[in-house]
Amino acid sequence: MADRRSTLPATVDGLLQAARSGSARAAGRLLTQVEGEGRAAVLAAIGPASGTVSVIGITGPPGAGKSTTITALVAAYREQGRRVAVLAVDPTSPYSGGALLGDRIRMTQHIDDTDVLIRSMATRGHLGGLASAVPAAIRLLEALAYDIVFVETVGVGQSEVEVSAVSDPAIVILNPGAGDAVQAAKAGLLEVADILVVNKADREGAEQTVRDLRMESSAPVLTLIATRGEGVTELLEAIDHHRRDDDPARRAARVRTQILSLAMTRLRTHPGLADAVDDAVAGRSDVYAAAERLIAPDSRR
Image 1: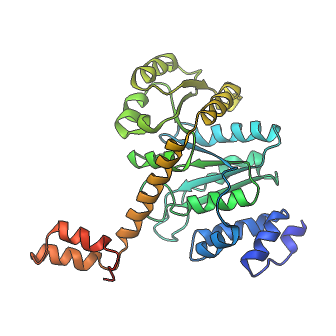
Image 2 (image 1 turned 180 degrees about the horizontal axis):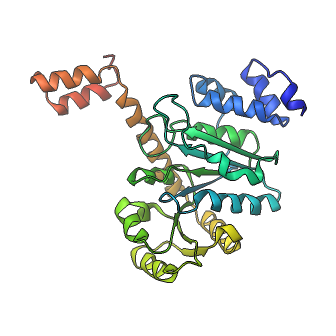
Image 3 (image 1 turned 60 degrees about the horizontal axis):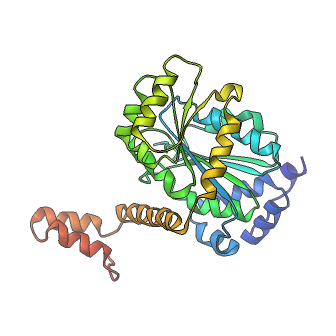
C-alpha cells in the first residue's frame, strides 16, 4: 500500500532505486520511458546487459492458449523462487497509440504477486510483431533483478518470426487440428521454433498434429493442457535443456536480427524517404540509388 501512496522520484536514478526497492509504480514508469523518448537515458543509467536474465518467447496463432501457457509457466517458476516478468506485445491502437489487446487481464492469477510484473507493450508500427522497445525493456528488467522474462507476441501472421531474435528459446504454441501445423509452416513459424507445443492436447486430433509437426520440423514437439497444468514440467525441462545448448553463434544471430529489424523500422521514418520516393517516381533517380542514399552515413535528408 505504501507504494501506491508514495510520490515517485523525478530522476531515472531515483526511479531505478525505487524499483529495486520493490516499487511496482517506479518499474512501470521506467518501462514507459523505454517505450518513448526516455529510452536512451534509462539505458545509460542501467549500463550494459549482464546476460543473467532468461528470455522465453511465446508465439502462435490467436486462440492457441499463449497467455494460459504463460500463466502456468509463471506459476511454475514462482514455485522455484524466480522473479518473473511478462511483456505482452499487443497491436497498437490506431486512436491512442497504446496497447490494444491488454493481455494482462488474462493473467489475473499473478496480479497480487509482487515478484511478477506483467506489462502490455504496443507494437507502434514496428515490423516483426515486436515493439521496438522490447530489447530495452528486457535490459531494464534484467537490471531490476528479474530472472525470467516472457515475451508474448500478438500471434497474427508471418511477422511473428522476429520473436526468435530476442528470446531463447522461442516457443510456438499450436492447437490440435484445424490445419495449424500447415498454417504455421506457411507463416514461417516452424522455421524459428526452438520448441513446438500442442496445447489443448486432450482434444481430438492432437496426436495427428504432433505427427504432422514432427514431419515438418526438427524441433522438439511437446503436448500440453495448460488450463490443467498438464505437461508444464516437461516444458520446463525442454526450456532448460535448450538454454544449456546455446552458443555464441546463435547469440550473435539473434543480435544481428534485432539490429536489422530496428534499422528497418528507423528507415521507414527516415526524413529523406519521401524525397527519395518522389525522385524515383519522377525518374530523377532509381530505387537502387535511393536506397543507397538513405543508408549513407552522411544522409541528412
